[in-house]
Length: 324
Image 1 (cartoon, helix red, strand yellow):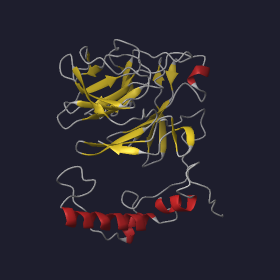
Image 2: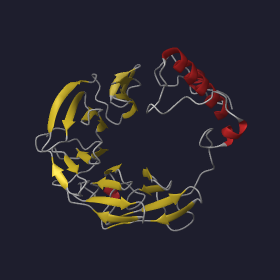
Image 3: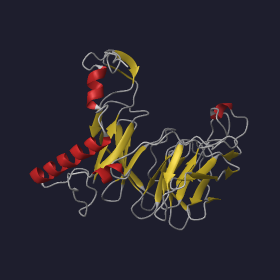
Image 4: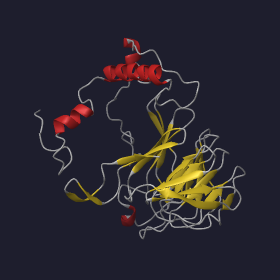
């Protein structure tokens, strides 16, 4: 198939599709990419004394050579399978919009009441969910009774269970006050404590003390899910309330950094009734629907999102990112 020489990004005359494909290493084998990546990591470590991407002091750069056997190991060399059908020919299956890898290697997936948008669904009285076992490629339906946890926030707790906060109540897109916990060992759902306010699109961040904080989704006051299974309101940390997933990460000092989507960054102290302090302005772009990732201790990459004029185009997300 021929290559279209149009710009990779509409309105961007600085980069053509062929250049973009070259940057993405299109048509380059996974074995070669892994080999070159490991060789480059070894070179960086030799020159700087630091291992790129290392999460702790015990991680070392592996030998830059990749054996043929390792290249065939999906855990080392990478491997794409054919498309896996998550309904396996049964009734209506589950679209894996929300996913969590469980401690036993299985994957929890859920979506909504059905295939249509939630504002088009007449009822919101359950959630389609399943657990997939990659080892056997088998599924077990594990639906959530009574509530639709589509548009909820979630995180994995220290014991491997999955905490889900909020969801979708009705066609008006109202949130719900309920929390749910998925027990990975017996694959069952249970009701957690009700939140003080309904939330739709809240963010949930696991904390270093085995608690978790729930932020936004319509309520200005965060809540902490404690190790005793109860909720504690952070009444002195009132701030972010948007019904958009907040960019949250735990700082090395145990506090929580709220990095977006708005430009103003804030630090949340989750002790007691909490506290919130303005940190700094991240940049001048409100990064709605952007992404973020923690890539090192105390370092976060924020990219994309927004609705701006860039590259000669209006009403587009930004191509730019930033590091914190």
